[in-house]
Image (tube, rainbow, N blue to C red; front, side, top):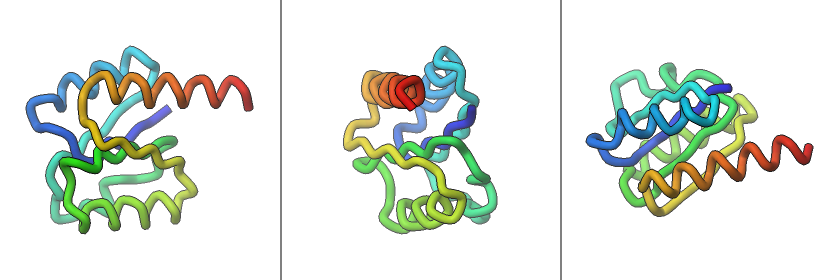
Length: 98
């Protein structure tokens, strides 16, 4: 399972990846928008948007790619490790119910 995290804090990037690994996800983290952002997103199983720390341009680009790939989108205003854990727990629960 793969996750793309858009936004968040640069200092938390390694911690985001470690948390995702604990839940069985492989993560890509984008705290800043690279030149070829659209290509780097790929087709993940889950796209997480930390809305308080990301530009509108980056959000719209990520959402367009997620819609194109039919990827689930989770949004959180908080970019804390607890918020990430809650999102991943919720995704695991919803997968088990499906």
